[in-house]
Length: 232
Image 1: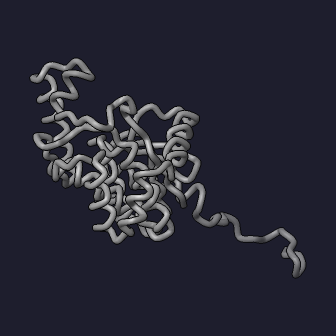
Image 2: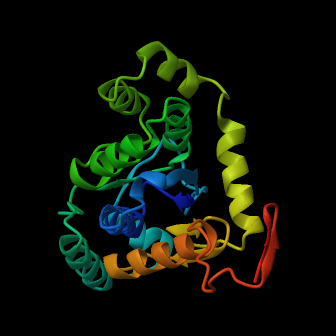
């Protein structure tokens, strides 16, 4: 069963959604049959890659929220994070353009390390307060996961994977995705937002039952014909 997840590194709900989704998956007997594919999405592609802003600066300049309102919203998200097992450190968070981080995600996907890369980028951004748009920071994250340093440098300095990132964003548009996290469950159902663990578990179970689980025969097989003859 395939799960596609559109996410952005600077989205706190994406981190919460990831944690809740993974906790739900661990509870299910078919977890080893699930393939997760991380997809790129940019909440604000207009951000200057050479600039960084604090969370409060971003809310004030880009969203027009006064500091008091921003603090209230951040407090609510922080509590949601704690409930999901995440200790957000918004005082240290640096907002920047995430295109390069998404390129690194696609490099990690090449080596089946996308899950670990997604987690590492979230930790770097939300916990450690690192600049996930900075080349040296991204190379350090890549090598910490065992990726080749020179390959990471080449990817970040070239246009390699640029189209992969753009194709993910374009695909999101075709699906009508305007916010993240966004999950597509085996091409049948979609789930948007950082839903609770039980919600994810029920959605995954329903999708598995309807698209993967073998058919259950409710009859006794009588009054039918097969290759070995007919039963009466």
